[in-house]
Length: 363
Image 1 (cartoon, rainbow, N blue to C red):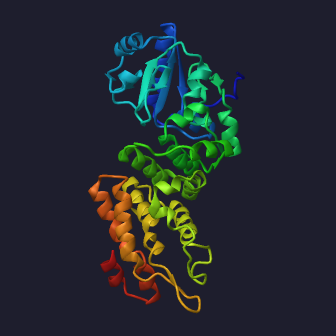
Image 2 (image 1 turned 30 degrees about the vertical axis):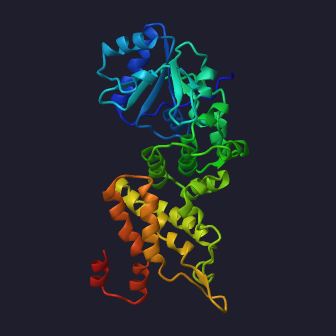
Image 3 (image 1 turned 180 degrees about the horizontal axis):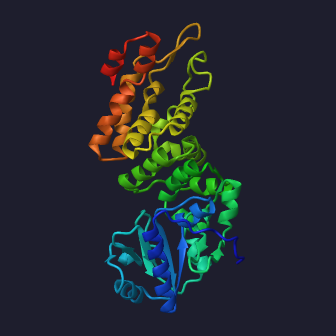
């Protein structure tokens, strides 16, 4: 396994950086070795700062690691059964490598066994995508990249690490939002693996979280939705799947069908986010859902005129159903739906030369 080029450790909070280095020094003093892995390394390779840190510790048993860190840090033990400790008050997770054995067909049907002496390349194989399987030693700067994750990032490629990817269907939705966030094209072999996977028993809140990241963090949201289309996973979101091939008046929508229009709208939205996570989520979901009703309200009249009468009200119905499968946050849904219902009004007011008062009433 070749060493990769050096990656700068860039953490935007000096307290977090100091704690990361302290954990690494404590582990080293006890005969183990701590590596930064995942998003912190990926972001560093892209020249970005990171806000949190995942450390994987080799060479120390979980009980010894807990005792060691507990002498210095307050610990949260919510992930203790999986070999993961959280430093209280800090966005830092510390864990040991683990082996996972499937015990059933469900998303949660795994037996997890911590193995601090697992070889690094085998630990990396348990991670989802190659760009998230790069290891950085914060004390020495040494990098281990067993699956060429840095090369994939440079090539703009989203590629899974190993056959273990297929054991967790949530990883397909992670692929969706990662493709959008980092403007990546999925490797053909990754698309093939995803096409053979189903959603199974994924919890709504887990699914909704991946959609939230797509909407709030996606630099090119259309990349994520194209990923769903490529992998056949759009079928699990039938309200969106139904938009493909629905025609639009080429005079007003020369970009193509309703599906293509929705992708263009999402990318335009991403260029104009406010930076407020809640507002961006509300508006982004409304953009995603605004034309759902065109799937069954579009007709082609004699002479070729294309109309979608009443699609706004139907879009509200379908958006409610779609969002209801992603979240139980009633406040979120109730803020999205009026934007869906009234999405055509701003243009109508503009074309009519309406007064500022009329615009304020709409708002």
